[in-house]
Image (cartoon, rainbow, N blue to C red):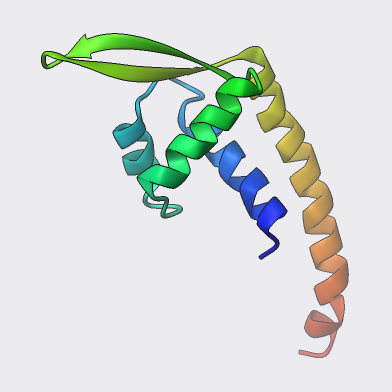
Amino acid sequence: MDIQLKRGLLDVCVLAAIKNEDSYGYKIIKDMKPYIEMSESTLYTILKRLELSKMLTVHTSEHGGRLRKYYHITKAGLRRIEEFKDEWREVMSIYQFVTKEDTDNA
């Protein structure tokens, strides 16, 4: 898969994982696991990129005597999810065109 396409997909997956509630690294990985495998190093790189893009914010809170970073989606992050949905409809249309001969010949 094209690296830029995969990067964009992973960004949107992380945003979707925190769409409904603030979350932290381990929980994000756990929530995404049924759909996609992601290493911690990949996740934290994505989280930093999304923070720099103002698609999420970070706050710390104490949990079990330790500080934990929680990630919160911003309006820009929510807009990115909606943009992705529109883009994906176009990708699916292209996919149907490309595979049309496969279904016509089946």
